[in-house]
Amino acid sequence: MPIHDFHTTNSVQSQIRNLYSSLRPSEKKVADFLLENPDKVIYLSISECAEKCRVSETTVIRFARLLGLSGYQELKIELAKTSVAASSSLSEEITPEDTMAEAVTKALQADARAVMDTLGIMDSDSLESAVKAILDAKRVLVCGFGTSGMAGQYLAYKLLRTGIEVLFYPDFHLQLMSTAVLEPCDVVVCISFSGSTKQVLELAELVQSEGSTVVSITNYRRSPLVKHSDILLLTCSSENPFMSGAAASVIAQIAVIDALFIGLAMHNPEHSTKFIQKTADTIKSQKV
Image (cartoon, rainbow, N blue to C red):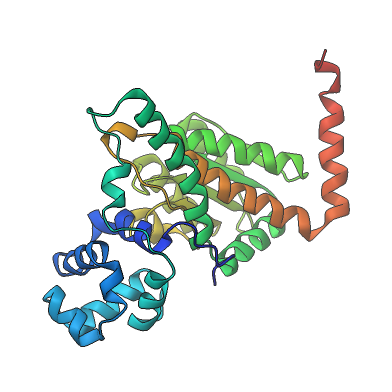
């Protein structure tokens, strides 16, 4: 279930845009109609919606469930919660014609929107499962490369602050070597915006086959990484050619990491506070 029913942004439309490239042709017809006519859909029966999309009712239902909804009725309810225009996604994209002020505004709005959209789709059951798995683990290995590697380093920092034994290496060979010390009770957190980074997929498949629990943080529910994941934590951030590797994707990942950190800290506040203070004390001498 969602962590918080917070809809200042349209998380359903954001999910549709994020999933779009992986949709089947018939599903893209539904996606196109929903994005172009969000205000009209709420007044249509499933039969009328299917007819306008030129697909079967089954396809519409399947599409709703792909978004994590129970069916068409819940899809209409989610669309009704916001009045965001369907064309907004186009106006939010940075283009060569934008002035610097316009481009900067769009980029920072995308950063803020990534956090709120991620909150809108965050699943409490998955989050609690990830927290429990990490608490039960002897050690945690964090895997991520590129901008996702930045988020991985942040996760390693947060876990260390709570007294959890964590392994993180930017080098892929070292990450592979570190899997040799993992035990079946251990956890591997794989971070990949696309969910299709070759090194991450290879490592996830390896550790899962050896019994470790794989927690994945990715932006795409249909990505290859999902197939090698035991627990899935989704982000919700959009990128266009001008924003590839943009801060919004990392900020969304950090939002999920902060949620994990809060869950871990709240499980045993006294223990967490002790280690947070202890780790802070170790670097006091480094401050002027």
